[in-house]
Image 1 (tube, rainbow, N blue to C red):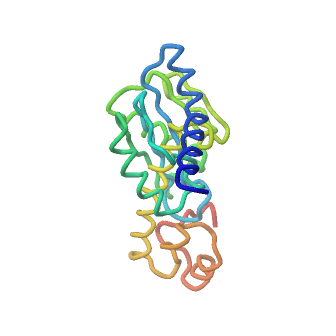
Image 2 (cartoon, one colour):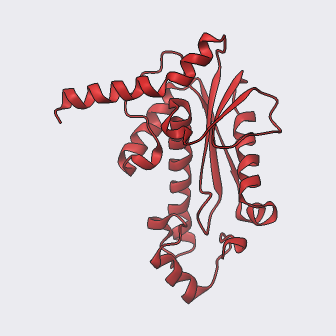
Amino acid sequence: MTKAERIEAQKKRLEEMLVHERSLREAGKTLIAGVDEVGRGPLAGPVVTAAVILPPDFSLLGVDDSKKLSPKRREELFEQIKEAALCWAIGRREPERIDEINILEATKEAMTEAVNGLALKPDHVLIDAVRLPSLDIPQTSLIHGDALSVSIAAASILAKVTRDREMVRMAEIYPGYAFESNKGYGTKAHYEGLAALGPCPIHRRSFL
């Protein structure tokens, strides 16, 4: 694929991912927040969420489900999204809270925290897969929303890069589990570290 063809494909992809935002704007909504989480599946570390409100003329190419992007591309888009966004915020819940109330409820708490942390109050929220009953804002839950909505995809990138950076730092504090490469997920190296060292303070006891 030539560079021109790649750019054309990215433009087409962006148009596909703006469908939900455009539909809401046509219905009179102006501040639309996308919300997503990263870290529901790992054995260690926090669950991290992000909320972001993008401007109506958002045109950054390449924004997609964070899992589809290389680490280098995520890092680039992380900075570009923060610069382009009207506002953004991060939420998180630690392993102790996850063990206390379960991962789904901890994720909902962290998502609500992210939305409430926005400098502007959204008039509609697009969320990946879940609903937030404690939020007094109209919301739409989209299954695989990070592949369907540019706002949710942007949030997924902000959450993913934030959490990955955190887990690289945790690898220095708690060596032996290969957190720098597995980010807390249950890889062979991680299980070998658990067998040799036992759990560390950031492990989720309810997941082990």
